Image 1 (cartoon, protein in one colour):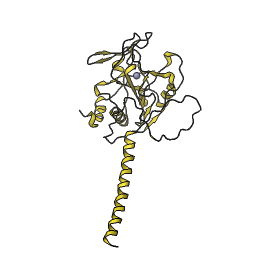
Image 2 (spheres, protein in one colour):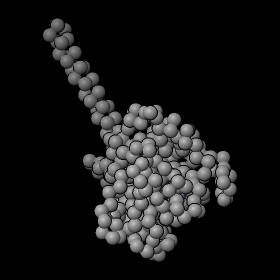
Image 3 (tube, protein in one colour):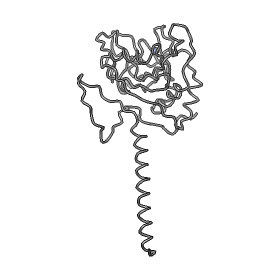
Image 4 (tube, helix red, strand yellow):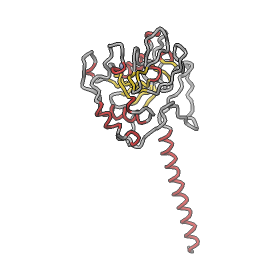
Length: 263
Ligand SMILES: [Zn+2]
């Protein structure tokens, strides 16, 4: 084989390697940018198996910063709530005043199992007083379960106010109900340990996987650390203490491992 022939072989090998690198890069970026998808609720009971979309769409609403620079990645799944248990976010309040609060993350705990909570949220509730939901539940093993799309209003808190740096934040969206943070809240609930299935003021706390998944989830959003709060802190009914035994230091330690959230 002459020198010219070797050169041709070398060009073919180089081209092949380049093609492989491009393929791997495309696959990687595809995974990073098109992570969990929250799909629309089926409009009928008969659900046709839909083919994998050619161009997956990110339907995270405000959750678009997607900081995956820290290697942790939880298992994710979608278990959509019945549409009676959530609604649209209002742009004006019950008196016609514009609503433009920034998003607020509100942490809760789910005293029974994730599956019993999901059952409740997937049950059709025609009466206002029975309707409830969180956007997301984090199970004991760290699995992130998406229940209400983030752009929708979940019914996670009743009578509630967030004491923000520039004053109290709350919204009256129905004049028959107390004002609430629901209109701008993103509700996340951690599944309680088995020793917490009572009304005691504390329990053995949340798993390391739950703290890691919560930090990852927050790093996917535009919600700043100072706008992450608890149901206990925003509650004005005097009846909510959740999430009990939440270790802020532990959570914040994981959150700060994301470059976009570094202290
Ligand atoms: Zn709660």
